[in-house]
Image (cartoon, each protein chain N blue to C red):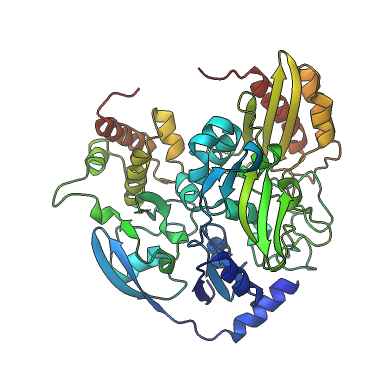
Length: 177
Length: 331
């Protein structure tokens, strides 16, 4: 295959790619860091900024454990290159709660026992923050569909859906079925 | 992931120039498929050209009453755009049937067209695959092929194109706008992707160094009678075993215009103008739906594990037709 062969050949000829300095506005604070082109946002957060609340599950965009909010939208940090987010506003699980308190979703997850091992929880909560901001979910079924990018291998789904439903209702300030 | 060089393109012309001069370079936008393929060592570009800063994200009125979707508009932008929801709800439904909210927030219109097959052998570098490495053989033909194609296959490849969005775009007769070293051109979506033949490593008819700038929807949106039926292994967040986009215009009980397209069954969204023609002027009965299915599937062939897809597609077509015909515009 021509493309394959030429890319393999050129790969050997490529000089060591330069790292670059970027700024990420993480949880309201500008953080300056040097990243390689292939450093994912997930690895930059965990390994360089020591924000280990965001979890590495599958590292292929299938489990949702790495979900963070970029410019207010939920994304998979494992399939995002840090260098491409230079200057972006990032919110992680560490930045949701005001001060020492809990974010309403964090409180709802506790109230509804929405976890067992807890590994998927930061991703679930960040994803739910995105879901509520999107304003598209109305019913429990909507929540299940729009949370399908977050897998919980302990199977805590009933608690997760109930917690999000409660937080969503409180956020909207009105009752949904 | 392999090492590579990163460049940010500031305008379309410089992006095209940059990719034209380096055979191993790739454009990156959402990155949801490309980075995954790089982690799996299936793709190993020498350079990534970041195109996310190009002015290609806009959704605006197109020529002749249509709607023009910028190549960098995200799947979410498109699916929830008021004009798409109002005039092209079939497209919204297809997009929302695919991936997860996180991925839809990242993935672009152009990237959705350019995404590669999810054939497990294509991803598994320990097995032969003509698409990944030409002339090594196809592991799927005699392998585990439950998810594979039943139409337009070749002895070299039975992979499917995984997109839901493209199935709706095919039914809506969208046009892909591209630009490259030789200038601009427009490619009907139905001709954008290709069948595998003896060169399955080539997914599309895009020429080297060309870039997708927009996808244009014609004025007819089939908002009153449409359905996207997707059958998959679990309720959400899975690729289609079979999907059907049905777009109808009804004159009373009679179909005045029909567009059917299938997903999950071929190397490209599958259409057959004869099936559409057969439905025109006929009532939307189950019999006529089955006749149309017979035309669409006339060359269908299973490879063992995926034999069931032929009957499944037949039934999914009938269901999509019935849903589209019975639909009433919501007040």
